[in-house]
Image 1 (cartoon, rainbow, N blue to C red):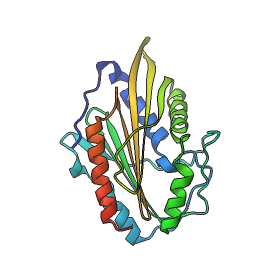
Image 2 (image 1 turned 30 degrees about the vertical axis):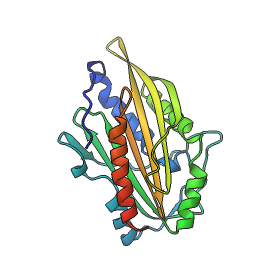
Image 3 (image 1 turned 45 degrees about the vertical axis):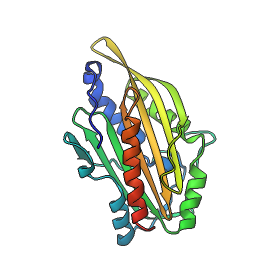
Length: 238
C-alpha cells in the first residue's frame, strides 16, 4: 500500500491550482496521448465489468487516500511532431478509469483499463503508441497546461525507465520537472515526478499514472501497484 508524502510548505498556496491543471494535462489515457483520432467505442457490459475488475480500488490504499471523480477526456489534440498515433480503425469495448489522491493533494495515482474488440487490435494499439516519443510528448502537454495557469515549467528528464516485465506487454516512463509559481509576490520552485507504467495482456491495456513531489512515488510502491494490477489483468482472461 502506498503512503502519502507530506506536502512541502512552499507549495501550500499553489497546490489546488496545480492539481487542477495536472488533472487536465494528464487525463488522456497514456497510450492515446496526443492521438489525432481516438478508437471507436462499442462498450459492452461484459468487457466493462472486466475493465472495472482490473483498476485500483480504494481498499488498495492506506488511510488518508480518497477516490476522486475521473476527469473526462476533453478531446484536445496536442501538437507533438513524431508522435500522433491514429487509432480510429480500432474499437474499445471496455474503458474504466479510477483516480485517487492523498489527503494533502499529493501524490495522485490514476488507474485506467482499456479493453479492445480483439487481441490483434490491442497489439496494434500498443505497437502504434509505445514509442520513445511518448514521454517527451507527455512532458510537452504537461508544460503547456501548467503554463496556461501562470506557472513556469522546466523539464528535466522524460523517457523510458527499466521496469520488471509483469505482463506480456510492459513499458514504464518517467518525467521529472520543476514548477515555479508566484503567489503574493513570492516565487516558489518545486520539483515533481510523473511515473507512467503501461501493461498489456490479451485484449487489455492498463495504465498507471502517478504524480508526486520530488523523486515521485517510491519504486517499491510503484512496482507493488503494477504487480497487483498485472495480476488482475491476467485474471480477467482477456
